[in-house]
Length: 314
Ligand code: AVI
Image (cartoon, rainbow, N blue to C red; front, side, top):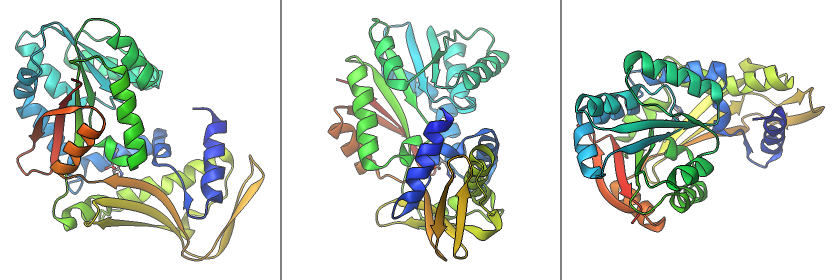
């Protein structure tokens, strides 16, 4: 992503009536390390739940695919691949013939993932692709090899309803009939459990959010004083949305030297940073059908906190 896109998005976001910074900007080098820490927190349950699903139900998932081998397992936004590795390991132990195709826009992320995967699974057939999800899905679907696309981690929860529609129609348009999509959804549950996952007592999620301001300071020459902003997140069990914010603790003006622009904050003014939507199984089924998919099965963890939902493009 060019500096210009970042600078333009920040300018637009800070000029809006409800100021906002997109959650996609969490993941610079520092933010990615903080996110690793979040995934290790006991309060942040989704990682352990999805790890359990892929470790214990890998065989069930693969049986359900009923692909004539060999097939591709295509991971969209692979991250560190630890959870996916559980699934791949089981397939390799069963002697199933497949290729693992991680797709990411970042060549660096792909290189690290490849090295890491091969250090654990040296005989894995890995064919990484660098680029945009839709064009890579389209490219893979032009061959007759069946594909299982993975969109794990509950990332779909970070998209607004219209963005979910755009994403899933893009996946659908580029997939071929019979291809499958396995998507991770965080499920609605006791509101207190969800609230704690996004407002941890150690303040790791707070630092994750404040890093956005630090990133603007570092990359765009901003002069945000991090002591003058606090983190606030709120789960609304009536609509399943966690929304996270930074709060300006006083009236203040912040400047960005790279663009020469400045932004006025009133006391207690919010910057919206993230949506983390929690779904019901009914929501997931409606979302699948509205976007042209059929649900094959939901694979839930033992606490029923999270599901990897398997869909087919009919
Ligand atoms: C990446 N994504 C699914 C995480 C989530 O749960 O929304 C990011 C995150 N934000 C705060 N904690 C974790």
